[in-house]
Length: 336
View (cartoon, rainbow, N blue to C red):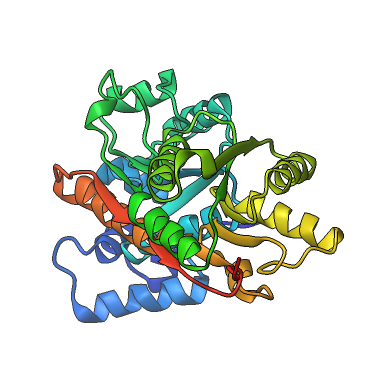
């Protein structure tokens, strides 16, 4: 493959390399005619400026590290897309990676992006303080946590802004709707047991509000693994104790429960009523459509990108923000 250089552009336009450089970087005095010559040469040759050289001159690479747990998860896919789209509109490229819910893979990604001279990082973190995160702080690179926070926040991480969702209102509204549909008990499937303070907060919010509304003896909570068989086992245990209304705190588990129900001939909204976190597209397309507690993923993404850009370009001292969850009722919640 032949790469077109700035010298090729200068030769094609019949002007000096320094003049081409000034025209491309909008520096110095360049006539409109000369600038037009450069633009024609660039278009005809298909020249792409060397971002590494530009970065050395400007001390900016216009590249941002963006780490999510699992790009196959529809929620994180939409979150990553929203952030990278906002960054792109501002002239930045996102270097996207996945941690697979592993602190070691998270740290490997951070180490990798540090070697690429990024301008900063937006991270959906694992729930623990790691050495690689501290290295980001030591490099004085802007960093923002998205969707989850880290506990304990120490060693400089207490100053890292967080944009995440507040589960309380969405859970309360969902539970009140369950009660209004005639149910006297409710179950909660909390998702895989991983070190996530955010998932733990979600479960605790459910326990508190559900016990207040239904009474503690009518509230049932179970955790799953990362597989369908564990979801099936949890669902059967819920059925055995008389639970027919489930709130599921981790959307991939909701998909697994839906598949188990289909395999066993159980009807959503009739045999078991379902409400899931995350308003992903498959829940809107399902029959019946699935009631959800929406974390407002696009809003989280847009706010995260806006705050991060403020940190980058204005050295803004940004504050953490929480986005209120919203309950969206649909047909998957039937009558008791």
